[in-house]
Length: 182
Image (cartoon, rainbow, N blue to C red; front, side, top):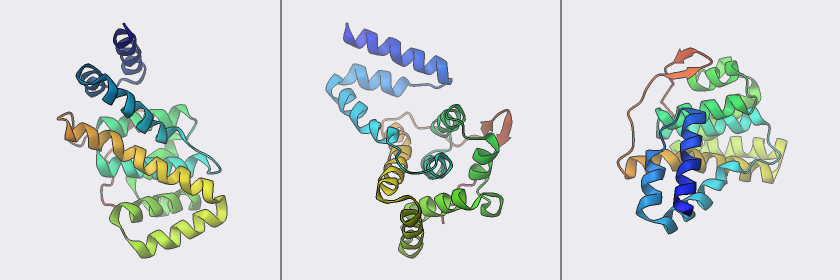
């Protein structure tokens, strides 16, 4: 009975966001305990403290596009729009042209790219500046955002649900995301 309820909630999520959550349905049917653990792990992406939404979004979208520029990235775009991030900000993040971004957004993108590329010099520089501006809880938020952004697509690829890159839509405009992280 509980599984049926969860399947209905997942179906509502799919309809609301235009997202195929087959992998979550499959996980639920395969192992309920694993599904519950998945739910706890994915809560990382809901933690945001002391960091502006545009910086948080820059880190998350950079992370998800590096891991998967398909349905997970599109879901991240939709969620960011619903949280109030302007479409123009999202488009700039996806295009990856640092010169087009506001300075705080650019700092978030540079930080995320450096973490993904394991570029310790840039990570240290950008982390120090982000922490100076926003504090330690902001860094926890950004670390969680980056981990959560890559969690879903990585799991989907590992379980056979990964998809190839696609052009992404931001408020009706098609964007080919910049995939380079360094």
